[in-house]
Image 1 (tube, rainbow, N blue to C red):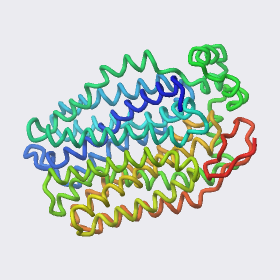
Image 2: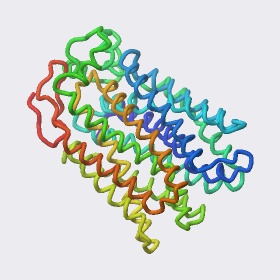
Image 3: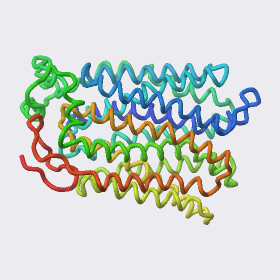
Length: 438
């Protein structure tokens, strides 16, 4: 079991990721209300573009904040990102027109994009090398619990108070969370050692009972060169895998944000009422939470690389099955299993980064892989709107399923990490299920 500080870091990052999940899924729940708003007069394509503005902001946030985190530290970056997107939730709640609302969604995306590439390396560091896959998936259950909360809240709040109340509900919790993060979230010992701040690292390690020698072995020699991490992930031995991870991340985030954003409306257009359409969002997030809880230990044994490829493929199959008219029990089961595999595949890809790249480069690697993948999260909501406006019907599901298939191929083709690096102490597995030499 994780020790006390590992549980604290995991719990705090889990709650922050829950708030991010709430922010991202809230838009999918209010789309029907926005489309029905007589003042805004949005089309499905316009609503899809608004959904893409947040994910375009996330693309920029992932690329910039993920890299900046390896310069300025993980603790402060997490607090800054959480505060930023919460303030922008309140901004969206009072937006007078679609243009102002779109600006708010884009700006919120900047903070949202930087959160996971910052929080995940911190969780994986404190959780321990043998539980990195489990730590990453446990943390990401918060994202889908956020989706569950927003879907359940929408069923109660939207008919009575309208869509603006949903954004206020997402903005308020940071008032409680920020003092908790300030008081209890530690800085990364790996980050401090990599920047040559040995005294601070020793103090954090002493206070939280962290093995400082193990951290030194992971990091190796400190370097003031802030471009070293970028040169590593795009350098000899890593470039081919980095490019394939870009492809897989693009496909995964296209599915998460495209399919996740439009699922209620897709089901509504298939003949389900708004309440039952929202219930599909609930059931896919229930499946996602179950997938994240169960997949982590499986991925650590099977290998995160193989697990991600299998999960992408299986998720694609169940997305396709949702398009088929079946008895209610079977279609809800298909939706749950789509969530189980589909949303988990991307998280296992992120966990694999923790095995594949040296420790000191994790935030940069995650930032770039998530950031380039955010192109998929920009394309996904827009693509869904275009498919709906074109009355694509069941073909909308098949287009999203194809993205899952491409993600599976990319992960399967990705090469294994180099067997030895001077800047790291390798974990027990390289993410393929095979041990690495010390």
